[in-house]
Length: 292
Length: 312
Image (cartoon, rainbow over all chains, first blue to last red; front, side, top):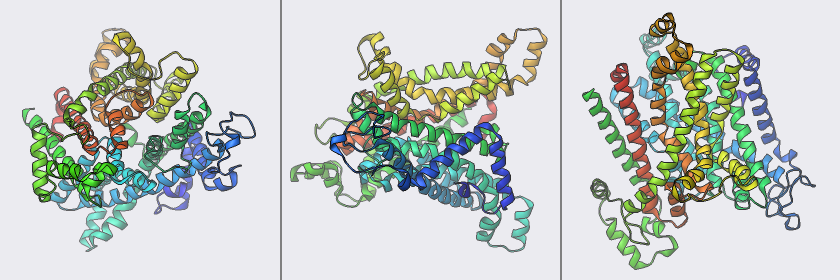
């Protein structure tokens, strides 16, 4: 995660400064720890889980905690704890590609809008505004209704709905930078547009976008879980947190621990990423604080 | 102001036109024959032929789009494939339930959020402020549907203080049924509004008319509650308008969790029965609602703060 947040153009020592800055802030430290634990357990999930998260074991079904199963079992006898851990992996598998895809596309379009001709800017802005005018979940439901539920659909919806946010921020940054002296100097020396945007603009924009990424991850995790809860996200038997909530909701009187097991990780993960994002924002760009 | 209003509504109309076009093209871009997809397993040749004629699928795409817009202008969103009822009627039957939920949620969260924000601004950088800030961030981070599920589990299933499903009858019963759902939707707004009010309040407190009020010896409570709040509350109006999309989104989940009627329930049910015209109709109506409320928020903001008018 840290690799992704950090500006690749900045030196290693600057990365250390940013992390140290986040860790000094108590909330930032909590966020860092939570995110660290989630990433760790997602990466090493296969070694952590005590049971196969999708193996059914009907005789042991609907056992409340604490038994041999730390967090009990669901209606098919699957181990809740294992499903919670694996669910973290699924959540990141959806969130990370979707967010970084959206950032890459939004960044490119936003820089083009900010640097290119006025008509292109107007066109892209209209497109961004239109996409933002769909209530996210409603848009997601429309897409799911058309192409059917799957992990790819969720990734697509998240990308489509987040591109405008990144695009707008990238555009604003580009607009403020386009007349700065170092860009004018580059242009006078005959640098191509591609070179100006990728070598000179990009490093100045990406820091702000990195903060947005950290802030967006919880939204995406919640959206994936929400769609899976409705049965319109990842397909069973994939152990998503949303799927856990779905099973728990259906049998809320018999297996309430499923609702807790699916709900708490989402709350903790959103808290962790939000704390981290807030603290990162203050460290990377204190000016942003006022605009929120 | 008139110019701003016209410009803003022209933009809103343009956005709606593009949005409808995108939705329309999305349906057409789905691989396969749209009629079979819409009707699903229920596709009989007669039903198919009827739907093709109704949706003018035998015409060219631009012509279809024009016909569709023509229908929209007349308030015609198509017909329910199965019951034959007007989609517009069905959607507007459900809309009031959703609006009631959204408004109750935003009302309680705005009141609490503003109070919390004022309180934090009155004691800046004390431990009270810090606790309020942490609580705000934590509330903001809580996704509505998780709050809905957990509160359903705790307060309706375990403690049985509140009803778990339905909307109730009569005023008190209805209000009672609204408590948990609007708690779920409003919780993140409390944090959001509190932070917003705190920030803008601190800004306003530094301005000269507040200093004057202080110099006249008015009580701090009076200054914050009357003179500063009047200005500090402006961003809240905008944010609620712009937040209509989030409110609608969280209403979808909350309606499902608490088995309440409304747009969300309508859409989900229609997806399961593959009743496309209803899904599209409901999505368009909610998008329209969102676009209009964003435009209204901009207008109110411009009306109250002349500086905002230049950004049109």
